[in-house]
Image (cartoon, rainbow over all chains, first blue to last red; front, side):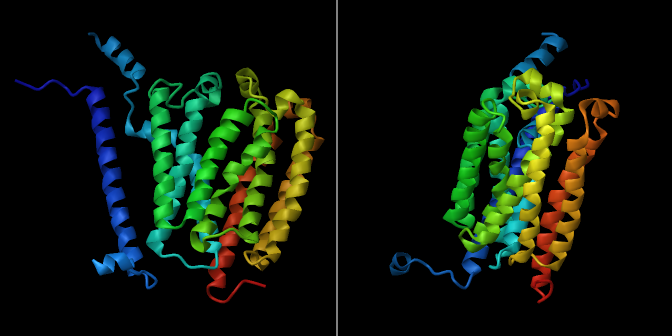
Length: 53
Length: 313
């Protein structure tokens, strides 16, 4: 038994979902990179109320 | 259900591919936004961490793209009429108007909030104002109301270098206003040159382009006048902190070429233009793109060289 050919609609949906997944992964990486860059800055200071806790 | 009916329902429900959403962001316009914002950021006297700079430029680009999506949402009716825009995702039926609106609004808010977190509130505020100006002031109000739409609306495209500058410095200065003014004054002759050889499109869509309301002779005069006003501004920028000898040389050459092109457009009659299929107008339009790219590349070069103690006055 052979599987029926994938419809063009499914290919398009897969492409869209893959694209969105990659964009989200890139966004997470970017926010992580920004965090590292911010906390590595010599002007960065932990807010005083955070230190007290 | 037949294949034919399935295909028809696909287009009506807006089951778009990834590329269609990307097309909503007007990638070609976005490339200009990225380039000018990057120059604004690098020309500023305050260094920025590369990751912060990259993120800021990305969010500026996303904000610009989001305003493009909102523009396509509002203008879907006229995009269906104009040949140049009939292939866009909404008129082509691949994305629904509601989807484009939601997409544009979500990305606008995200871009502004993320830019505020990545850099500062001045840059984020300028980005929010740019989106508002392009969508509400230009697209919803001016575009269909006045032939001066391009002149005032051009401000929206002129903000990116100011935002880039604000990312680095946290403020606004003479230099960033000059970069704004350069794009602002360049926009009218650039678009009117396009309108001269795309005449039928704007007329059919009922957009009050200068060519439609005041005639083509008047548009030719306007191109010359704006180019004459642009030249001293562009050359004068050479004597500020973002200019220098390289910028001055580039500006003198490019402005001489642009002025000659504007003069040629002004001198031509409609019969002459139709006889050679608007050759001069098309040439000046292409030159206008090179003009802006050249000026901003020169500003970038000056700032790179200044980093090595070279190039300035």
